[in-house]
Image 1 (cartoon, rainbow, N blue to C red):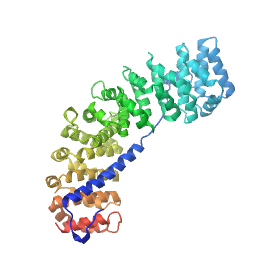
Image 2 (tube, one colour):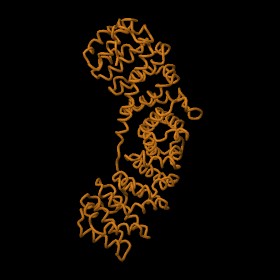
Image 3 (tube, rainbow, N blue to C red):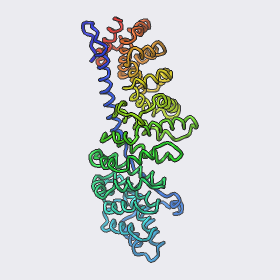
Image 4 (cartoon, one colour):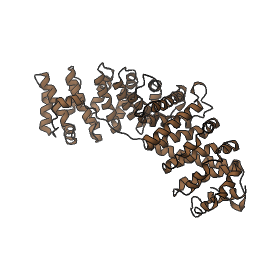
Length: 493
């Protein structure tokens, strides 16, 4: 805690180290909260053309008798079209949770469906897989577990020749993975990781996008860091994921979005991020950041905001894992190009997607935290004022902007001289008036650094009635020690 007891000032080094410790603790808590906010979802793959061909009929809830009838027709019908239509009717019925529950408790129903899945007639096999896909979309874990007899076949079919069928199997597996631990316990020894690793070399973009979805579902489950990610890192998947994220004419947005999230979940697990760095993770992500900045400059409607979030998170978290001096050679990020690209994206987010501003600022925070060269780039490119313009957006954005400025200020007197004078004083007077305690606290930290390294800042602050602004926070339990310390520092300069 801050202390100004007996009016004595602590050495600059002690104050700076305390500020760093407090900021590291807060950032660690924020990283943990962000990891816990990872969302797990399911996807439903339906063929719009076939839905229209079926006449737009309203799917009916099926009882035991209807289910048994359609299964019998599908299994024993005399004509292939008749058998296919029976499975289509069953599939449409399985869109209802009530039908799903009836189906899984009906003796022999899943066994019959799996038998049709293994049929040597392609159309029947496809419709059986579509029925399983409808079941996989259920929110009931019992329904997912009822599909256990089919998982080994779904994995086997990933090595097939039909891209449409492989895509369907991947989305079905992705849905089943997330719903039931029992399913995952069965899929792991059945070889889901090697099967997915084999799929990633497919030339079909639809297959790759479905693969990215299934893999991301697998990487998000609670046991992933211990049971899954080590196997993924031991496979060829990481190098192929980075290959699919390399900017260039072959980069596909849908595929890149899926695999950027996969990479994000791997990095967040902290299992072995040095491996990703050795495969060129930082350089690939840095180049992708530059490519995205160029794209938003060329056109407003790029859809790249979908890719920006996971890419920014990947870079941010990878930087916290690896000190920049360890990342040499081809992995070294180029300071000015990265900072310039990031500010282009920040301006784009401000106009089009303000919710992504914290992601960009989090990366800027991690870039400047331990790197004087990135701080120098920020100053030499006159980016402090554009940064200050983001302060009014929200409290979260304000805290991150102020944290970045603290990173610059703590590098010493030469950096503080570049920060002051300028628009910073009036901005800090404004943030000190904020009702948000964290915004005020971060403002106090920045002012403390400025006063220590740039005595003129304290004099300007006093002339602008800064002490009166501080007085309103003297009764705040969380702030009063820091307010008192800052008052003492200002008066002794």
